[in-house]
Image (cartoon, rainbow, N blue to C red; front, side, top):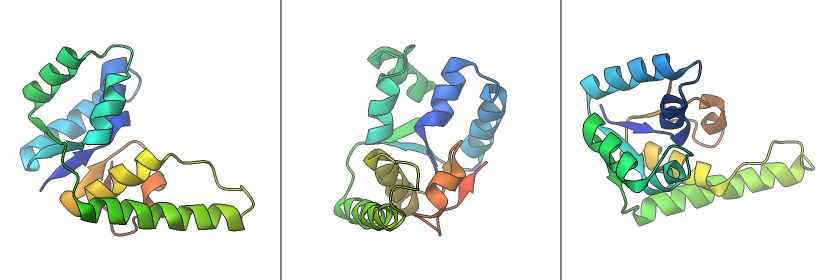
Length: 138
């Protein structure tokens, strides 16, 4: 079972917040169940973490066995675009009632939906409407 990882999971580990231990356990379990992957946008977001450098990130990925999918194919872009367009339509109809979301969330969700079996994220509700078939954890 291949697990895609959202930025917030790794950020929580590095920040040592209240969910860090739980995330470490979930990552360990996911690693035992199959491969771990992040999309290129997650890689880029992680570089912005206050405790990150390119070498820290590279070492973390090597140590944990997380692979970075730098080459997002056309299907991922189409799925992200369709989900983002649907979100924009819902937001317009709600007159701004929905919280704003970033395009990167749709790319991460599309990548997980097409290239993994599930997405490990701290925000499963964020992805459920845009990608209803995507399995999210925890």
